[in-house]
Length: 354
Ligand SMILES: [Zn+2]
Ligand SMILES: [Zn+2]
Image 1 (tube, rainbow, N blue to C red):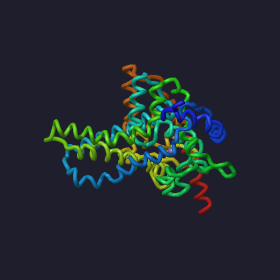
Image 2 (image 1 turned 90 degrees about the vertical axis):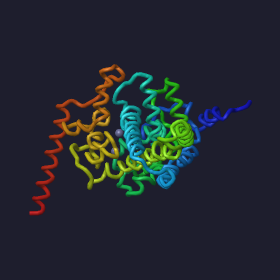
Image 3 (image 1 turned 180 degrees about the vertical axis):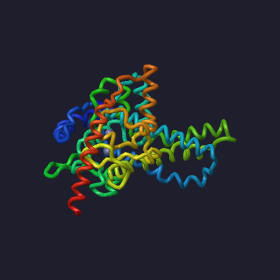
Image 4 (image 1 turned 45 degrees about the horizontal axis):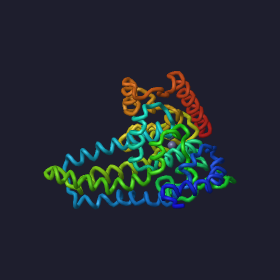
């Protein structure tokens, strides 16, 4: 019988299923969709480096592309859109399920999230929810600065295994990347994004250049294929990757930003980071209330939490509903507890110094 390429993963999938389920039990990852298992994720992941390489090299192409202010503005708009693709789509919705959305909007968010080039929907959520959050800044964290700057920034992406608490067998990268969320199991369009996310990211580079050629043909005075490729595709993609990878380092380092809550890790909030992280800049708030769609919890923080403000507008139109956020009392209680604990520590320091 002829096995088509698209069916082959299914065949391998059943062979891998038991092994993966056993390993993943360490992180209580117990929901696997056998349709997506066994895809040679490692190969696909290597392939996704192609896109990363193109983005990294893209600034060189600026010499051919030239410069115009309107291209730079367009580049910044696409960058902001992709940041939204990460913060609200990949992170708040597909990883933490902090609100509910209409099916068409869910698919739209899935596409934008995939185009943020931070892993496929399942790869991102698999690492973020099952490895990062439960182990933040402890041995089992996939990308904590406690394991070193380069590890937290980029090296973790090229490891075969994730680090683990002492005495526990390391978990295969592959097993985490294959994790899928049962909430989306019955949506074939989301299964498609799970399965082909990495390939779509790679394909988007040549497609962007082709689209640029079409635009150059029709609007030669305004755009060139190279300018479209560099300013609309590569540079925003590079900026999003560099910015979001820096969350792993800066968002979890003592020397950066400020802390409002005792979230049992080193996570930090920062207003400046809004420029490169979007609404995920209040990372300490997020680690304190990971299920919350709202990350800006004080008045000024809320002014910068565009994702949450946008959600409230979409809620009025019935596109999203069931937005999860902590109550005012709970926020105040946790904030006060942290303040008291901090003061206690300060007095102990002063006492021991005296
Ligand atoms: Zn974090
Ligand atoms: Zn999170």
